[in-house]
Length: 100
View 1 (cartoon, helix red, strand yellow):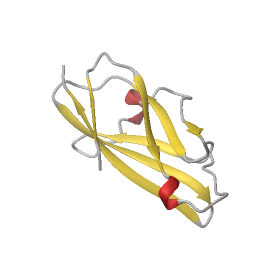
View 2 (tube, rainbow, N blue to C red):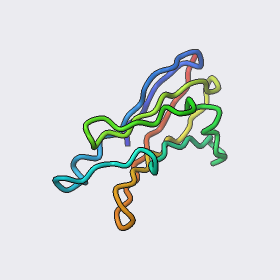
View 3 (tube, helix red, strand yellow):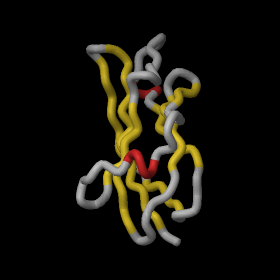
View 4 (spheres, rainbow, N blue to C red):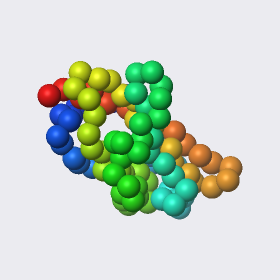
C-alpha cells in the first residue's frame, strides 16, 4: 500500500497499475470500475474527492481518477476497484494524507 500526499487545494490524477495481476490480453473496463475514497470513520466521501466523470484506464491496465479536496490533517483510504470480467475483479488500496 502506497501513500498519496496532497494539499486541500490540489487537483491531480491518481492511478494504480494492475498489470502484474492481469493475464495477457485482459483489460480493465472503465465503465464498470471504480475509485472510492473513505475517511477515517470509513464514511464514503468519493463524491467530494473524486472529480465526476474522470475514471479512466491507461494502457488497458492502469486505473486512473482525478482527486480533489480533502481536509487538512486527515487520512483517507483510496480503493481502486478494477473490473476485468464477471469472474475477475481486483482491488488495491492506497492511503491518502492531506496536509496544508
